[in-house]
Amino acid sequence: MNDSPWGAPPHAGYWGPSDRGPVQGAAPAGPTYDALDAQQTRPMPIVPDVSAHGGSQDDDRGAARLGGSLFRDESPSAPPYGAVPQNPEPMHDAPQPAPAPQKKSAGRDLGAAIGVGAGLGAVIITSLFIVKAVFVGVVAVAVVVGLWELTKRLEERKGIHAPLVPLAVGGAGMVVAGYVRGPEGAWVAMALTALAVLVWRMTEPPEDYLRDVTAGVFAAFYVPFLATFVAMMLTAQDGPQRVFMFLLLTVVSDTGAYAVGWRFGRHKLAPRISPGKTREGLVGAVSFAMAAGALCMQFLIDDGTWWQGLLLGLAVAASATLGDLGESMIKRDLGIKDMGTLLPGHGGIMDRLDSLLPTAPVVWLLLVLFVGSS
Image (cartoon, rainbow, N blue to C red; front, side, top):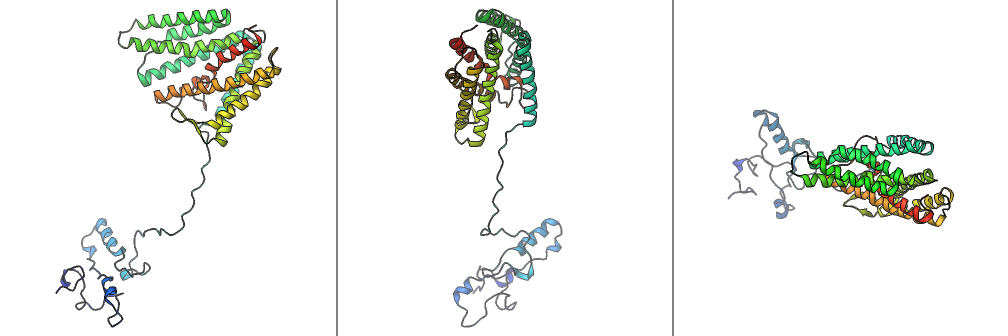
């Protein structure tokens, strides 16, 4: 009968009870050695001479044979023949070090962002309060650059060829027309720009004509037409103060949303569009903008009152948030993070105009209702 517990004869590579002598670590024979202990003790296999094969692969195999526990009652500190396991398994009961807490990051170079923002603010404020026409020129340049970024991204990511030349010329003319002729001039310039886009695209093959001109008309409305309301605010007697308040409230709203959302944000506002925005951040934007609006309307705007500023701040926070989400929707559709790289720490011009553009008509309309247009 075969005495090997695995059914192999003694000469098949295992030491039997009579041909090699007692096995190291086995229980002694006698009345105290019961059948259960005998079943729990496995015989040791013969380890082949791995040096005869050569090569690192065979050496690893030999080490693996020596490294495992061959006896259930064997202590890990005393493996057979004094062999040391090459890759000892980690002890699951040992306490694992706690992961280091991760610090929140703004995701941008804040130093560059602050420097660029301060430089842009200096240019805007200087031109705004010294010569109005210079500020209108600054707005027109920003519009042309924003149109270039938008049409470039549409071409790169979607293959949409919105004609840039009529958009740039018509966009700059739209801003000037809004400053000189008011709302009527802005609407006429918008209509002429759309017509120029339709005609300009006719010089190319008809494939995708409808798609390209639709994108062109959208770009004309989204960037220059909304920007004309900034120029129209400037035509009032206290125009520089109105434009300054418009810029300040938008910046304060964005700052409040960032500060409160970064510190207390827990509930996502629109995770599919902009995962970084939270409901707590929206509350911060509303609170900061309403407080700043009350102060600005009381002390900067002629015949303005603090309660009008509260309403204005609430409207600015809502429109700025919607504008930011709108551009985030466009960028997600295009599969990009920023519209451009012109402004270090900010992205492109369009990444700074996203909340300003839809806020401009809201502020212009409320100021006309509260204190008039002149």
